[in-house]
Structures are given as structure tokens and as C-alpha cells.
Length: 396
Image (tube, rainbow, N blue to C red; front, side, top):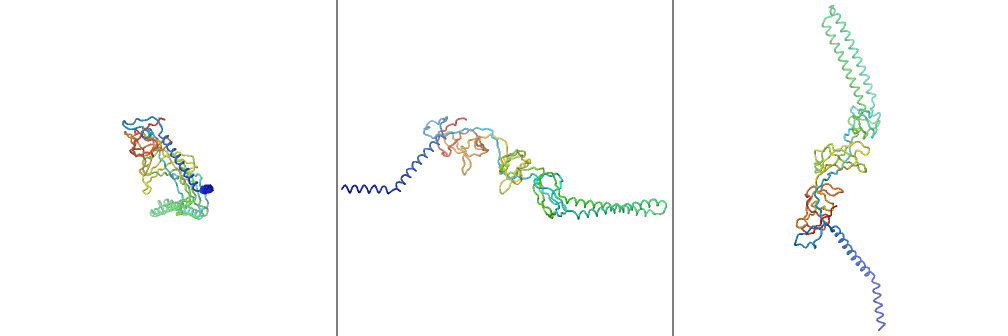
């Protein structure tokens, strides 16, 4: 009998020892339960701290105020808030001047400038080979001398004829013919001079010159290259080195931007900002993107590279608006909103339009007068129509 009892106890012990998986599951379940309890306690403590005790607003008579959840509220009033609009865009030369071949073209003999160089108005950028044109100029110059010699001879013959006409040796008709000959010779001189001038002008146009002083942005030609009127731009010059930001703005923001407003421009990858001024606002809106363009003029700086990307903050003035902490403003698929507490201490949703967002808070452009009791935080735990115990936030 005792032997059987001992055998049974030994079997029970072995069964318990062997079932380790069951014991592990029990331990994991116990750990999870403890973790959930701790998390619930932490959430309760956080909620209590967010809606912590402050100056209480008395609840209407007849309600169990002590049993209602306490909610911290603020009455923002109105204050002056700086308004600014953020935009992004591409840097470019304010006046980007493409320079091409003005004459008949030819083979490039020399290129005299490189990108990044400053040039003066009329400075030669490249020279086209001109040996044939030089010979034509010399030929036309010789034609001018021949025409002048003919004109001198015609004048001398006219002078002799006029001296003899009084003696009756030459008729007046002969004198008139010599006058016509003299005038024709002078006209040929003028024609030859005009042809020479045109040839010299064509030779002069073989020098590719800067149309204005500025910064060379691009060079698209090399010595030995044959160029002509259809070769396109051989050089690009930023007039005066002036730059600009082509800022893209939403249609609603573009309405607030005016010529003369200042802006702070920061190129991507740079910590340095540059002060500019809006000098032109686009009169049209892109029908695809619903955006317009504001052009911000900038003085030259080596950090401003055309084609680069930059951001801009445009100062559009100040407004009187309620200023709320960021924790008071919420958003969903319907837009931005806040919760306010009405006269019956009930939660009411109020849709708002958000203005400037800064370290001081969120400016409310529309939707609030500033006299409402706005839930400062914990709005995610509330629902419209819920009764609460409003607690005025302590003044800072």
C-alpha cells in the first residue's frame, strides 16, 4: 500500500517536471498581464498631468462637477502675429542673355572667356576667322580710291569747260554734260564708301561681343568649331550678375504677395540666407498645378548658382489673431479644428483655418474670435457634446 502511494507521487512529480512548455506559457501570460496593467496606470497618470489641477471654473448648479473629467482650457484673446509665407523654387539669372552669332559666321579662331568670368559691355568673347573678309575689305577700299580719282578728273574737266564757255569755245550744253559727269562720279564715290562700310561692319560682327556687362554663366563653343546664325547661343551672361528665385506659390498665397515685399532665401545645402525683394508677381496661374510664380530679386553671391533649388520665407506683414498652443489644434479629413467649451460646459467642435505656425504657437486665421474657452490639450480623449469640468490654465 505504501509502495503504491510512493509510486503515484513519483509519477505526478515527473509529469509536472516534464510539462515545461505549459509553465513557460503561463509565465508569458502573467508577464503580459502585468505589462498591460502598468501601461494603463501610466496612461492614467499622463492624463492626470495634462489636465492637472489649476484654477477651476465653477460648474453650473445641479451637476455633479466633481464626477466630471477636468479639462484645461485657455482663452487666447488676440495679439499681433507676424505673417509669412513659405515657398520653394529655382535660382536663375534675373536677366539671362544668350549670345550667339550676329553675322554670317565662320570658323571660331579664338575663345577669350570662361564661365564664371566677369565681362564688360562690348567685350570680345570669341573671334571668328576672317581672312577672306579682310581681302574683300581691301578690294572695296581700292574701289573707293578709284571712284575718288574719277570724281577728281570729272571736276577738273568741268572747271576747264567753265573757263572756256565765256570765250565761245564750248557750248553750255557741253558744260551741263560735264556737270552731270562730275555728279555721277561723286555718287560712285559714295556708293563705294557705303560698300566698304558694310564690309567692315560684317568683319566687325565676326567678333562675338558681350551685349552688356555681367557674369558669364555658360560657354558652348570651342576653337575650330564652325558656327552660323542657326548655331544657337554660344554664351550665356547674367546681366550685372543679378540673380533671382522663381518661387512657386499656391493660388491663395499668391494673392497675399505684393511687389516690394522682402523675403529671406536659403539655397539647399547652405546655412546662409540672403535677403531679397519681390520685383514681379506672375499675372497667370498654371491650370495644372494651380500655382503661380513670384520672382525674388537677389544681389550676386557665389553661393547663388542658377539652376539650384532654394527655399524662401516671404514676410507679408502682421495680423491680429488668436494664438493657440500646437496641442490645442487637431486635424482630420475635414480639416483643422479645435474643441471649445460652451456655456453648459459641453465640448463643441469648431473648425478653424490655421495661419502662421511658429515657436510661439499656432495663429488662427479664421474660426475663433479669441473669447472662447479652448481645450488646451487632451482633445483626442474628448468627443462633441461631452460634459466636462473646465479648468483655466495658469498664466505664464
